[in-house]
Image 1 (spheres, helix red, strand yellow):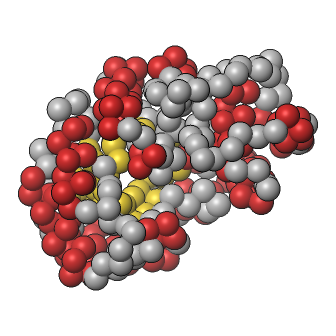
Image 2 (image 1 turned 90 degrees about the vertical axis):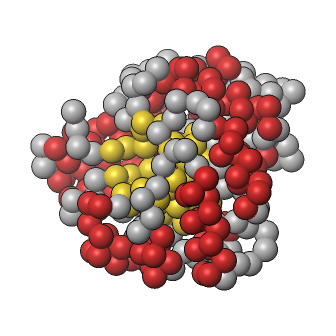
Length: 303
């Protein structure tokens, strides 16, 4: 088994009524497992937990555990706007066979580092599952500072951090704690550099779109084929640029690509608009998107 951990932040496929699209979720998970993905973040930022109803959220976790069938690690996003709301999310999901809960810094209101220490320590005390911090300051508006992370890492039920900020902000934690505390990075533009330097735990939502590329990156790392690794990274970075520079909504673009993979469902709940027919055609004809599906039959699955 590979020592490299590749964790896909799953999207949440929805029906036109914005309930869970169960066949879409099953197809999404099986597609990832078929390409060697060995971890999932369910209901994370990619899964848009905060936009789901409580019943859909509960069903999402339950069905993800069922479809995964113990094959990959399952972490679940629980972070909400306050202690009590996050506590209630933990209470919902800890009844399922999951490997940990992942909590964003609370958002909407700005909190101090002292507030965050109290918040996470309190969550760690009540959770029956391992707790992971989630640093995403570009979305939450609140940064988990190194000193805060190091203090929280002393708690026996805080097992690690998922860091979506730049790698330099979490490097001191890696250097100080080492293997005693998991540092899972979301740096899809730097994966070749980080893999080559020995960083072994990676997580991102883009893996869901191109799991075969991620599988090849793992193989290239294990064989020390650094040229191959760099070439795949170039394609991955170009795909990221395409997604973030498009005038179309990001999650609607993700929906179109996943539907092309044969995964039904809408991954962009309202008020995000769907792609127009012209935008779908333009996306499908892009050379990079064509490259993803080389050798495959491009599906026209409807959401």
